[in-house]
Amino acid sequence: MDKFYITTPIYYATAKPHLGHAFATIYADTIARYQKIKGKEVFFSVGTDEHGTKVAKKAEEENKSPQKYVDEIFSLYRSVWQSLNINYTDFIRTTEIRHKKGVEKFIQKLINAQSIYKDQYEGLYCVDCEKFLTERELINGLCPDHLKPPQKISEENYFFNLEKYLPEVRRKIITNELKITPEARRNETLSLIETGVSNFSITREKVSWGIKFPFDSRQTIYVWVEALMNYVTVLDFPEGENYKKFWPADLQVIGAEINKFHTIFWPAMLLAINEPLPKEIFIHGLFTVNGQKMSKTLGNVIDPLILIEKFGADATRYLLVSQFPASEHGDIKEEQFVIKYNADLANGIGNLFERVLTMAKDMDDDYDDDYDYDNDDGYDNEIKDFQKKIEVIYANKMNNYQLYEALTAVFSFVKKLDQYINQKEPWQLIKNRNSEAKKVLKTLTFGIKNIIFWLKPFMPQKMEEAEEYLKNINKQSGKLNLFPRLK
Image (cartoon, rainbow, N blue to C red):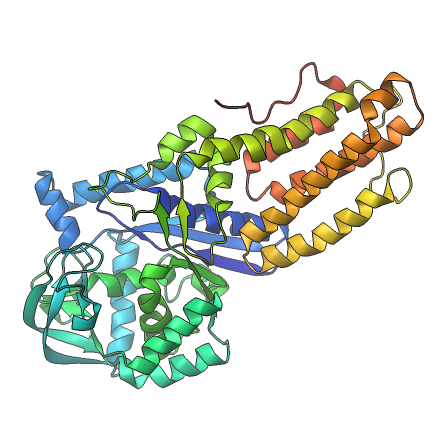
């Protein structure tokens, strides 16, 4: 059986999950489910990044130990992912013993490869970002993300010799041995390399909450460095059976704001220890809410649980993935959720399914749900031909992780079936006991079965409900109401 290993970023444990975290995780979950449907053995990892100065500071503000604080954050993430029906294989926490042991082995390999050296470092450090910034990254002397002046830090650290591996990282990106999508993000990475990326610190001297650097207990491994290693420690790097089976990752899903760390730093560290690179890194765009970046100060951080409570898990999954192509930056307008839900789900597939299956249920006893839908006899070739066309488009988009585009294709088929219903008026055929009624209803049921199959990775619970209803249609007493209309 072919394998497929997919990862999300591990989210920083300083606050509860928000819509951005939910988007990336739903996106990866949808891809993982599709790969399973294709018959692959899938390993899907998620996690939380639980070390660093910012975490320790947040814990102190709440009068808690860092471990107690991150335990609570972890529980929040796990709860939200369960509510969204995220079917991950493993959830890695960077405070786990297995992660610590894997990181120590990774660092030891870097030392053995003579890729680490000690030096004095002076730089600008943003505590909220947990990263060093250059002067050109600042806006009016402030961190562009947190609008705070970075701290000037001078300390002795251990460094990774990035410059040694940059030419090979660049070569692998250009040849697509390390595939970066979309093209704009790939070009961004290559531009960063051309501009010049310096060797980076892999330890901090005055950070207590983290994994200690081997052979020098005064140093703590830089949170960004050890966080990147979660993608292999979750597989029990380097001797674990899962590591041998699933690495390298087939797809790593990340956000545009962490591009440099994943497309330059991470591949370079893997090259240094002679391990395979991920096959592909997909970098989704960033989104704003009502035209503004999500911020607690602005009060526009949307809690996924609120959406789940209002729309349900499957509809929330759909509403996030269908907003705009993930390869682009976009804006989410909160007030549009209800409009889109009613248009696409309640009045769209929900209404289509209810109309067709109600008519099918009302048919004569000669209605046969075991009809051979792979046989070209007995249903309208116009719909069959269109289904074949959509199937090709859908498979191509899903195989290239273009979920928005795949949904667009599916909904063009929904529209086609609606047009077919209006054209054929099957309710009149049934009423008049017209012999064509059975052919039309079989054609429509064939179409619905395809829609269910296509939408299963996106809305697994609702599509399973529809599938079960269809399988037992002659035993049903009520109507199928997948998506009740909302006001």
